[in-house]
Length: 122
Image (cartoon, rainbow, N blue to C red; front, side):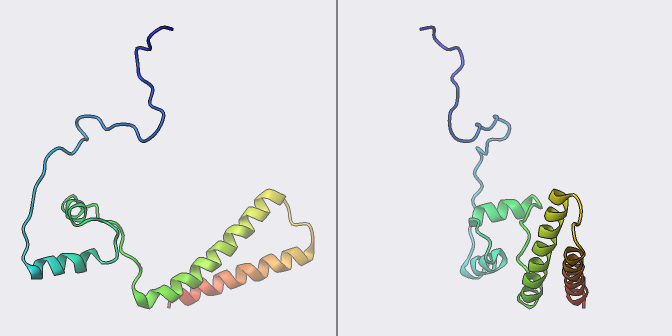
């Protein structure tokens, strides 16, 4: 058997190029109040402290979760959006509306979605 000139990777992500590898370490010392502030700023984000500081320094922080006051509206709107997506999928796969009952049902769902959008904006 001939020797393969290149080793083929079978699993895992592709290795980073040398210019993308993080080889430099910068440490930061914080007192208790600063550490508490940092943890408060991170909130429920699932990133380590160092990763959060790097993202903040580079201006690449992940989006914060919706405030508690908006969560109810967000959940209601996401249900309506899911229904709209199902309607669009059905219309795209069927090609045409086959009965007036189906048209009435679609119009009713669209009316509910519109009402949810109007209600979410207030």
